[in-house]
Image (cartoon, rainbow, N blue to C red; front, side):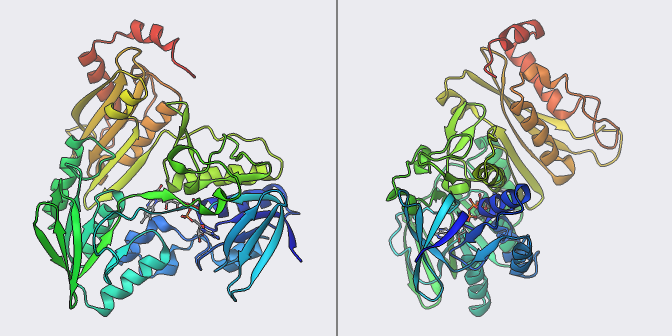
Length: 468
Ligand SMILES: Cc1cc2nc3c(=O)[nH]c(=O)nc-3n(C[C@H](O)[C@H](O)[C@H](O)COP(=O)(O)OP(=O)(O)OC[C@H]3O[C@@H](n4cnc5c(N)ncnc54)[C@H](O)[C@@H]3O)c2cc1C
């Protein structure tokens, strides 16, 4: 006999929990059932690098809420419970419970929030003991235990995206020798190579050995040591290898149920988080993301987006009509004493979507230079040559230069479909120890205009043609 649930949520992380909380907030008579495959409801996966660095002393500090807190708010939680299949016609979901017994749950509404999984690159010997992926709390705890048990002193990180950059910082703090290899010509491919090089220098200044433009071909293990052979024949030896080369949506569960996939093989959803099957919603890393600048779906798995999508799915699953207004692709990462951030499109993305992008790079003081402690940050601003529309901004600077705040200002402007010129109209705060009368973002907008030769009137005219 199947049990019956008004709202079943598969997944108990950022998207799943946000959905449950919102549904419950709007309808206190509903008790959503949230099932999750692991033992970590509402843990901050984003905090894993800071747990591995020991800046966060224990893994359980990463829980936003304890299980007891979640349950006391009216949400039912089943951990170590894997959803095996969905029957969309009968509106049932088969679950494997911790005891190994399978149970069917009948649902009125279903939200799928199963997240993403690590991409496994083709490297011989990748399954060797001592080689780990980093996505889940369990993996993080296993890596932590492995470092302790084997008194690991050296680590090789494969892939130089934000996860391994945070880990390079974190494990250096933990006094491990860190080597990083990346197949692209610079680290952090989410920013242009010019900024990637600054990030690489920061890593090297802190003792990380970086090999850009290198692919790992094979891994072999002898005793406690792992040897990674690169495609150019070079070998690197370490005691631990962590692979973080990207993520792909976890969709096996939904495919057999006839739930359609879209961009990046993620679950196809509309802006209300509805799938192609009635009463079935999806949110978070398993699902597509509406991209506000290009006006179509993309795949951009991020915690910030997962929370928003989950909240909307929760609201709509109980009768709401809220729409996700889209991402502009805002990201920030701290690498030792440097913050790197981006929002919007770079030249290559812009060209892909039919824009005529021009990027201009400049260096700007974070506050009035006569006041002590002024530091420079680097800004790359991208605009559309044809319309003057702002397309994207990338920044790198020390924490004091407030890169995270400034990228968010740019993100807000992008969200509003602003032109480069309209950045100059923003009323931003000024006091000499904190800023200049023109914020660096505005100074970079003016430099872009000078470079491209866009007069204010031309921009205003072009703006009438910008899609809103
Ligand atoms: C190390 C690291 C650092 C990160 N840092 C940042 C950051 O700084 N900023 C940022 O914006 N993003 C960051 N991210 C990305 C962010 O963590 C994810 O975008 C976010 O966690 C996605 O949330 P989600 O709920 O969609 O999926 P997940 O967090 O992946 O959770 C999926 C949930 O589904 C459950 N599940 C999966 N399959 C089943 C099944 N068949 N049955 C039952 N349950 C199932 C899992 O147990 C889990 O509860 C980081 C990711 C990592 C790995």
